[in-house]
Length: 233
Image (cartoon, rainbow, N blue to C red; front, top):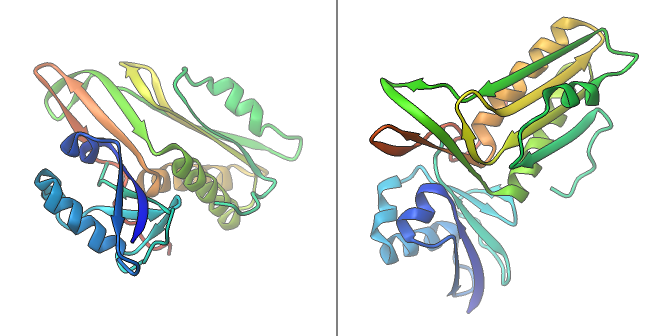
């Protein structure tokens, strides 16, 4: 029997009433089989059906992957590394304190850059006919940072940029505050615009960060990241 640490996040954590579990399974058990076992143990998890993603040691895997003794398994709910980081990848951070956009732009400033493009995502008051009170973010931090570095590296591989930096909030984010910010510098504006847009779109597709919307009369998890990363074109 192999012993595994299993991590659950956001809706999965709430439905299982646990953020971390320790379970034993026979050698050769796949992560898909482990997930199905958990659904049997915690029937409330079954509502996600096939939309849950799988990660082992902070890397996405498919359901046929067979973890080994001591591996950390994470199940990634649907929501809206170890390799060298290229020199053009600047600070990649996840923090609970407010994001300083000016500092992020200074991080990517360079004499070789003729343009700096930045994106900020802020908490808005109205969504889907509801009056939003605040947002609350939760992250699988080690994997989220790893995936953010990867997408930053991919942006630089696709466009000739000088530098890129990304910051994301977790915890409570009040109305009007910034939850995510990206800054990209490049010799020309076209590359900076394209790389910045790619970075925020890709972040919302693959990075394990989840958002709970607190509104007048209730709360709900809002989807942004996917359960399995889509293939790059």
